[in-house]
Image 1 (cartoon, rainbow, N blue to C red):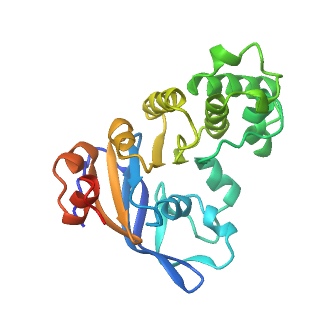
Image 2: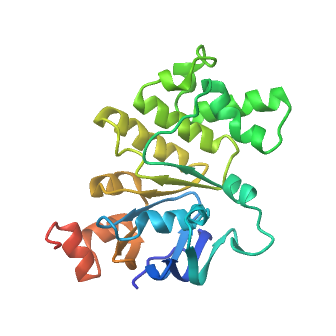
Amino acid sequence: MPTDSNPAQPSIVEVKDMDFAYGSKTALHGINLEVERKRVTALIGPSGCGKSTLLRCINRMNDRVTGARIAKGEVRVKGKNIHDADVDLTQLRKQVGMVFQKSNPFPKTIYENVAYGLRVHGEKDGEVIHEAVERALTQAALWDELKDRLQAHALGLSGGQQQRLCIARAIATQPDVLLMDEPCSALDPIATLKIEELIHQLARDYTVIIVTHNMQQAVRVSDYTAFLHLGKLIEFGETERMFDRPKEKLTESYLRGTFS
């Protein structure tokens, strides 16, 4: 598999020779992927190719699916195999936050949505929580819009605001990695633009891995792109190079719209 690398940026997520299965069906085959710190990596490919499955392997969200398992290989975050017996799932998901395709704010106030993760991890100091809420809402480009409405119900926000609130909730605990599973698919173009601008800003502080069906979005937001097909990683490299000069015929066919 052709890979572009930059030794100056050590990997924070490593997927090594991984097969992933749902019961007897193998969904991912021999995946090798290294994700650099504080960069945006896009996962692209046709529906059913394994993008979301791969994303969910990185914080073990697939554990919730009966029969789902890594059949071979491993996933490492900051050098640690996330399936080691001593790995605490709550701590893993503090390190690796996630934003889903459909915004899913809790039926609570705006403030309590953002504070939720901090409280789950045992934070009781009100000043610490307030500072974290303000920081997360600021990073999610929501503070100026909502600072006078923190006790309002989160479900009263617009769709775009709800998704940015979910991002704020995910980064309130300051994870190392932020996973985003098609975060703009349910949003209008203006809200999508705000999320894309936000992703660029978030990459200053976080490593972002995003699943997208929108190839133009991958070009706009990502530093690196991985193209998957039928559960296999066909090509991975710098986004600009891949879209201009793909090395694999299958990648070129998909990017040029001649894929069938």
